[in-house]
Image 1 (tube, rainbow, N blue to C red):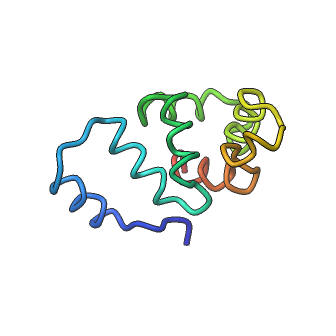
Image 2: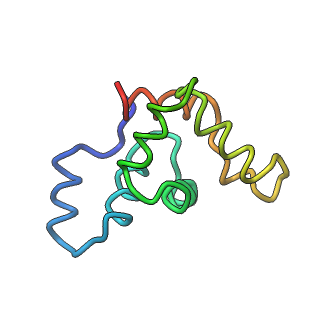
Amino acid sequence: ENLLLSFSAFIEFGKKQRQTVEDAFRVLLTSCKGITAEKAIEIVKFYQTPRRFVESLRRSAKPEEMLSTTFDEVFGKDAATNRKRVNKPTSKRMAHIWIA
């Protein structure tokens, strides 16, 4: 199972509090295995909305590697930013979830 949060739980979460699109996107991202809150924050900073994220995946020549490649370029490969990087298996899982 790639999702840690069911869709119905996500909807219930949204009903309980006012959220921006970025807030909802961040919560949705953290429901995916391998995406921590810190990684979700960085993804939202970079793509802002789910639509921009999906469009980027669809435009990518290798969507299954897009997140890992993009964040290697953004953060580099030093230890200080390692927690923010997205590994290749997680990148592949995200592509499968978002554009399957």
